[in-house]
Image (cartoon, rainbow, N blue to C red; front, side):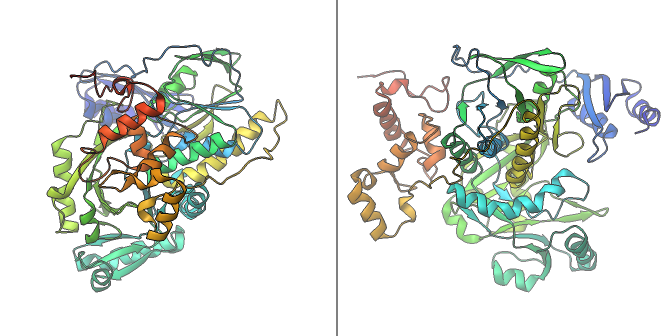
Length: 565
């Protein structure tokens, strides 16, 4: 990067309000701008896609207010004085998959997550697509991991008892005149870039496969699939716990003490820890963790994405993943997401992509839904806002270089970063975790003997799902346990027995949303209107507490305050 040339560009665009300097292996931007959009523009101007020389944003911005990290109210000394071999910060798909792979070894592994459950942020707020890699360029870590991750997903889901469907993806085009150019693009992706399942199909063939999609032609990638993102995250963490790892929820990292170029201690709301190795898988807070460790060589710029979930009757309209694509200036634009048939037979529509400085603001805005539906009704005219049963927004954690960071600390010796993880982070997580496992074991082996865990079992038995069973299978389960014959959630056909299974799972989260994420009561058309009071009562009975002590999602999410009669 030519810093002199960059500063001339910044001077021209921002009139001297921003300047850049090359500081070791990072480009440090400082100055003062009025809007967050200007900050993004300046940092993007300084960034080189996929570069290992990262942009660090120190620009002050008038639009950006104070945004202290939300912390749990819990304060105790449950972790005080502990010396884990590995401290994993972050309970998303990255942290959970790393914990599971490291549990193959005789190590004291502790995963801490500041939220009341796993996968409450980006890992539980995405569309669950397992990407084929058609849109990724060579030279990036994303491209390096994508095909192996896609291929490995089937194995890991089978081991963890998580549904995975290879539904296929269609990138659809309206103009037949684009076909020669897109055909060349497909040949390059297939033959040079290793996306081997790429093929161009006619509009007639597309309509034969998906009768509600009508286009001139489409790119087909049959290897694309879908998985429940929070279900996979929870399964990974449960298998890690089954193999000896520990998970501490409601546990926020508040600070670090360094000695001799290494992290000596980590302060949390539940005590001070003394880890041998820290793995930074903190999502939008990965930059903050790096700063605590005096190893801040990258910046995260949060990006919001909103999805809508449609009623299961809309699931019959399409059984794959599809989106219309527009080509301008030789660039295929995808803002506005796509349409995905989920593993639970809903249709999911979205997401969009909106830059934001707010790391934890997951409000859903009307304009996001409108933007996505305007585009995706061109993909499939049968889409209707009237079929929406719920919507959600997640905040992704990209770097300005738009690539992953998978490496040991540059200044601090005992931190391993798994940062900048955005799409296709779900797809790549299984193989990224394998590489981080190797890196962690190699680091720890320098100072101690690390031996295999002979009791390691990769199999997490899938919980019974009665709605997917035959009448004979269901009757057999009910004979063994009558609780499976008591339906609590009518929309999703969830029984009392399945809810009790969730409460007895290796990582019990006794909240209404915790149960909902594990076995789906409240996920149907009525969104918990009928079953939520019953689930609340069941949790109260399980814990032996009055219903007003049961929470929806966290300690602050009160459901009831007491009896009225």
